[in-house]
Figure: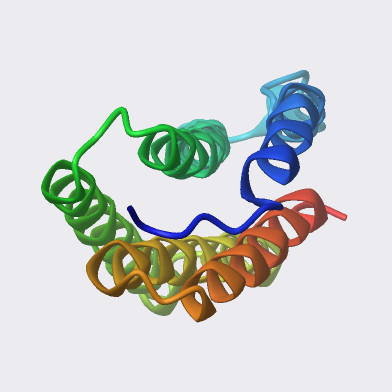
Length: 170
């Protein structure tokens, strides 16, 4: 039996409970409302605005789903819902996904297509994805080794990821 850190499950549940409220706030902050000056925007400006709003909403959804998916996987694993092999396979998928997202968002940020304010928002999103990546990486090492130090690393990065998600747009 792999040792389970006693704080893992109790600390994940409050995180998930806060996720709904944070998602609502995040969506509100980036939701498409009346855009100031939209009536005088040229077509390319409207298209860019539509793309940025969509990127923001999808990024918010992606962060929240990734955050809750990792927590759910960890909960399920410690409750013996998944074997170590199944958990490792799922974690590998999350690692690949977070790598792909980070690469794509970095490419967009560095492309020069964004205004400074939009690039700064993207930086905040990238920071959150970096912590999510480290969180699932620590979980993977825990599954592989059973070493409790990886639970501590997982918890540290989970807390940092959540802080980064809460800080987006502030």
